[in-house]
Length: 372
Image (cartoon, rainbow, N blue to C red; front, side):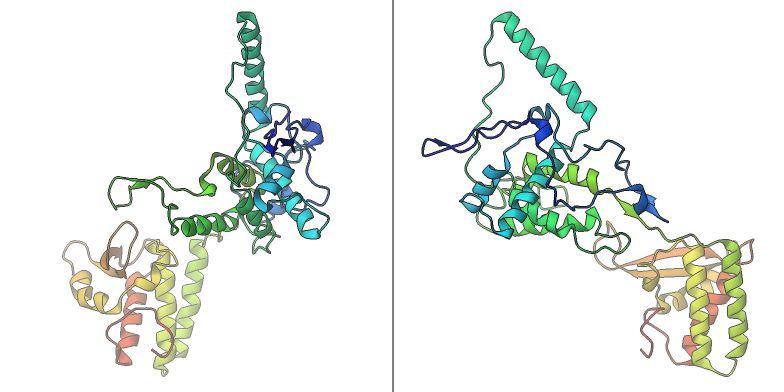
């Protein structure tokens, strides 16, 4: 039995605070996304929160939910935000539907087995209290303040955002939706009193502070956890490139190299294509790292690298900002000249360097906008 706030205004009871769990179900118009197995075509499941065959899962409250998660009824939440009772306007109905969904998400931040176990312990404590003649073994439950201390307003906005069209699924992913929470928290920290009362530590990455934002409330954390369980994560990773496919690509580029024998620009494009394929494959460079390869730095160390007396290699040099490092850095990654499988890193890097040389380009990024 989820318990409400039991709130009073001007000595008039406006919430009885009692709702049977089986009566507290999702709105009939609720269309918020729930991850199904059918959503996983060619995808990787990022969590184990797939919807089960239980028809009440994520859709209906359970006895004992109120013992684990703060709860206020829908009308109380509406009044806390709007300062009035809900009416028949379509916006009020939409808001009430979102409140119900947010409450259910918060309640479902814990699985049914956990809720049942906790409810059993509650019954045990009540039995022990009766045995000892102890009244009210638990602290008072409320009422909650007449304000949106839970963060329900932002939660409902996030639910609406979750209906936006997605790229790899019908709707956006949880990680995209949660960006709205970060935005709201950042804004709250800019207002007087929003950044909290004290800072623990210095101004480095490890500093901790107390933030006065409703999106940091205990209930809001539960809402985010339940929302993640319902929406899940659908990942669409790029398929890996096999060695046979790469070697065939290089074979086709060799044909282009011959075709563009009298076309310096064509040869440069071909050389760069071969270089980006071999560099990404053999050096395991990610998409955002490849553009940091620097032509001038590679030219500077080229002769020394390929003529090294014991370990001749290709000098891949990246310039830019790197994770966990401050400022612009040079990152050196030596790569074998030619792999045992036949990937000729030195040849394709040299072709790219010489291709730029013939066009009078000696410095700057290895990969750049055409014409620059």
